[in-house]
Image 1: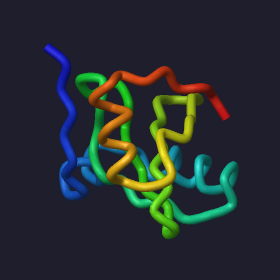
Image 2 (image 1 turned 120 degrees about the vertical axis):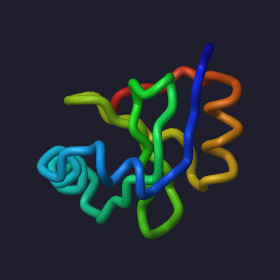
Image 3 (image 1 turned 135 degrees about the vertical axis):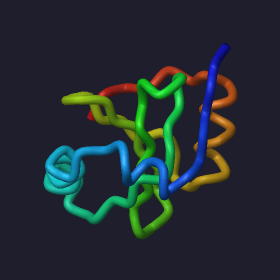
Image 4 (image 1 turned 90 degrees about the horizontal axis):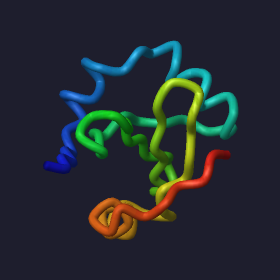
Length: 83
């Protein structure tokens, strides 16, 4: 079973702030944890412009330019390329 959950409260509690800071430095913008996909193996983050990213440890990828298209990509299990 493949699970995706959008919950900022849950994501903030599970993600290490240091890792989020590393992603923010790499992207040059703030990120807000918004949930997870891939049954918890990929945490989801949203930038101020709505772009959605997925990250796990040192892996970071852009999922889509906005939340709506990110959910579609997650549902399709689109292949993500590391940034």
